[in-house]
Amino acid sequence: MEHKVRARVIIEMLGSPKAHVLDTLKDYVSKLKEDKTLKFVSEELSTPEQRDGGLFAVFTEIDIWFKDVSHLLGFCFDALPSSVEILEPDTISLPSKEFEGVLNDLQAKLHTVDLALKKMRATASVLDNNAMNTLRNFIIYALKEPKTSLELSKLVGLPADKVEQFIEPLIKEKKVKKTGSTYSS
Image 1 (cartoon, one colour):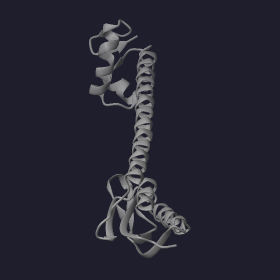
Image 2 (cartoon, helix red, strand yellow):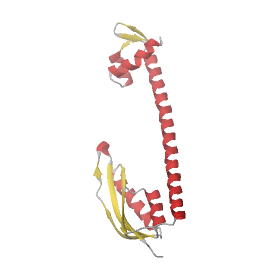
Image 3 (cartoon, one colour):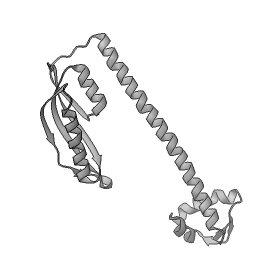
Image 4 (cartoon, one colour):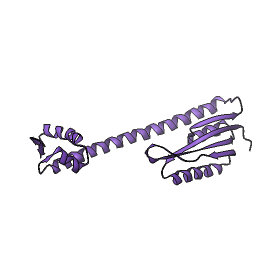
C-alpha cells in the first residue's frame, strides 16, 4: 500500500492518576499502530506533568504516513489530535467529490458534538434544579427547630452568607420565618 501524506501529530490526554493517564495514552497509540492504513515513522512520549486540580497531562508526538488525505482527515476526526503538521507533500489537491465527503463528515461530527453538548446542558440544568430543591427542602426541615444562619451553615455545609441567600426567598414564600437573628419553618 502506497502512503502519500506524511504528518506529525500531537495527541494529548489529561486525567488522574498519573500512571493511568500514561498507560491509557500508550494503549491508545498501540491501537493506532494496528491500523494498516497508517505507517508510523517515529513517536515520542512526554513525561506526565501535573496541572491544576491534581490532573496530569501527557502527550505523544507521532510522525505518520497516511494512505491519502481522506485517511488523514478521518484520523483527525477520530483521534482529535491537538496539532497536525503536514510534512509531505508540499501541495495537496482533492477532487471536489472527495472534498464534499470530507465536509459532510465534518458536519456530521459537529452535529454529534452539538447534540451531546445540548444533552449535557439539559442534564446539568435538571441536576442544578434538583440540587436547589433538595437544599431548600433540607433548610426547611432543619429549621423545624429555630437556628441562626451560622448554625444552619454548619448543617448544610455552606458559608452563613450563602445560606442567607437561600433563606431570603423562603421567607418571601412564607416557608421560613425570621425572628431576630434566628430562623424557623
